[in-house]
Image 1 (cartoon, rainbow over the protein chains, first blue to last red):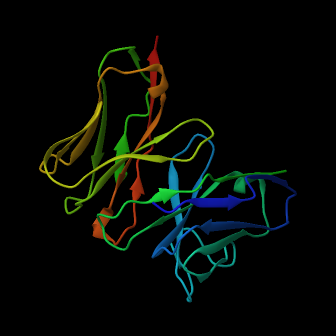
Image 2: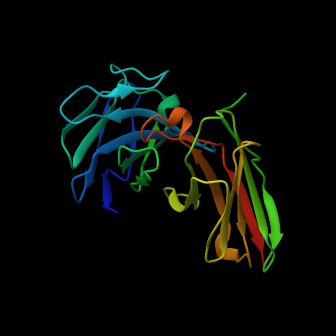
Length: 115
Length: 112
């Protein structure tokens, strides 16, 4: 599978600020996804990052709060906007194919703490 | 009812024993199922995928799927302390492309 990297690996931010997380894959992939994992919880899908078009957001997540870009088939960014302490989580990107049997592979994650 | 359910644990087993992890799902039409392992502070890593009813074996791991009863399980034989982690069950709900819904995870502790 393609290797995924994320930057930054962790950050501590002040309330009201924004943070952009980068996800880089070492080869072209069809699908890229962004997840949130709150402390002690499982993974929740935020959105599917679509190359060249607007991301597809899951219920409870909106573009104004979590704008996503995907300019090409190897790169995506997630911005967490106007942060509050409730946004403190691990943010993970993953990649996979389009078929329902295709596996998803995860990046190392970004641990975000909002003070 | 949650779409994918797991017992949160912790499940504690002695070293060398068989660990049995279970997962139930709500969408009867789901066709693909995945088990991920997540060590504390790390991202999930794929252990196995299963698509057909029955057993699928890979080394010490066996995935079992029963679509009629809507459950999928993971057996770990000869459990080792290094198997101590949270195990996440993921299901492709509604066969929505490659989108996965995760269970809450089961924490496994293997005691030497």
